[in-house]
Length: 326
Image 1 (spheres, rainbow, N blue to C red):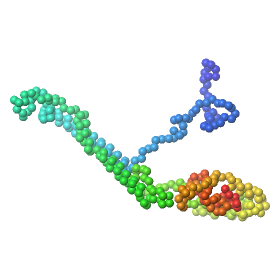
Image 2: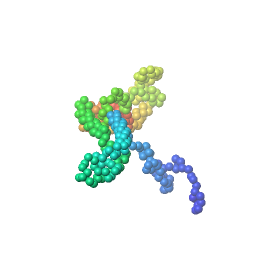
Image 3: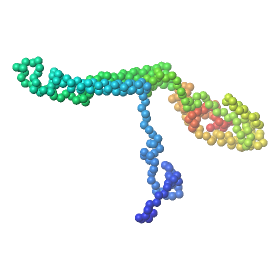
Image 4: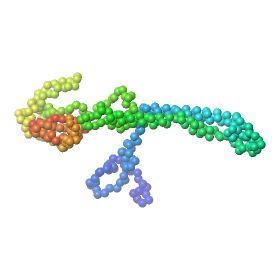
């Protein structure tokens, strides 16, 4: 409330009332606020989820079979317990040999009564249905294939050892053998088709300075379209690419051409770094984003040009010609 004892006023909050993390106060020395979207409400926590367990097809089949066997065993044990209870109730007095008899004063049959004058401690009531059911569970425990899981795990361990020692899966350039980190190796024999997504450029991408336009004048010959069915560019008047710095064109000055090439050489995200040749296998680039140069007057052999683009790898002489280098 604005005044003591007054009513509170609801003020809606929008983006103008939010201070993002890392914001700096410029026109005021302090600000009052509350922290929001923290803890469980943060984007990182709300987007996180528990990693699902991965089961192979063999594990799924075994789990289904074990559940089916458990259900079948439960039904069989229930039938056995029911029929055992019915038989105990019907033939209870005839089970004297296991101590069952409702007449507690009766002597042991088939024994001389002159030597066995005292009646034994007869059991008047037999076990109930639940006790019989639990007894049959113990007797039928062998029907559950618990050793099947142990056998499957031993097979998986042997398969992983064979994969790790497979000579055909060894890369001699990087000295890297195959490593079976997953336990789903039992599914490899069921693979028929592999669908792979190309996440990077598989071929060499050479960047060459072909054509430009300065002060409305085109320098460089038209580029032929390599895409099938692409429209052929109509021939236009153009100047030779070498005239960009010579200044032979009446509409383009040498200064503008030089500034254009300077901007091309400076306005980029390429950073020259030293390459670790000892860790690089022969014939392989050290980094997938590296741009290597080997011609004279450019980057040395022990240096690399790192770019931001992580999807492509470019190799060549760079973007700008005639002495302009990165």
